Image (cartoon, rainbow, N blue to C red; front, side, top):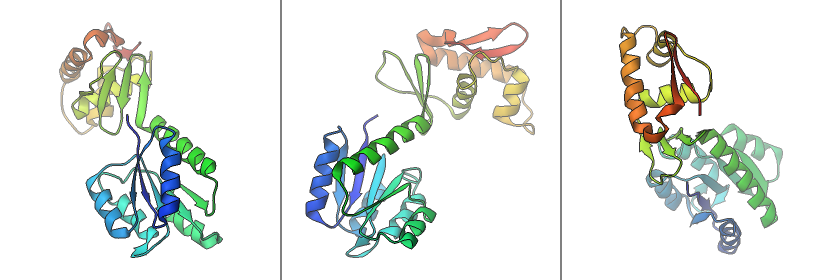
Length: 224
């Protein structure tokens, strides 16, 4: 997945330096110098990480935290505050509003880059589950198969079944257990529904369909 960073910073010289530094890591960086422009970006595009200056010419960067957290495209996007405010109250406010990290100006470009890379690596771990030849993209509820470039879209229940099995490899789940965990106790469907979903799922897994194993009379398990 390509990593795209949004940086909101009104100091043009600093913005250019940070952009150049992050691009050395292969990251795509878009920049804004005002609240208005940043809100437009946040509402129209999804980002892997957002860097925010607290003091902007047309508003406070803290307000952008709330804007992003209520936005469908970026509510799970980690945000790092860049600010000359080194007082404890500013830092506490930033974290209470949802910031993931806070770096005080002036900072070393290498330190910022290290923090960004660490946060992106952590985000990748949270967004993906690698199970043998299959990568589960948790955010988009799609999968990638080894050797294929294009992602494969699953239905919500197909994805939940695969995720349940893949994160518990070699553990056998009975049809009743799958029904309970995926459909819930108050939904009245038969175990044949599970079999049908497994059948559709295996077809989408194509040559890797064998990773979902059947245990006669017991249920299903994931084994890469």
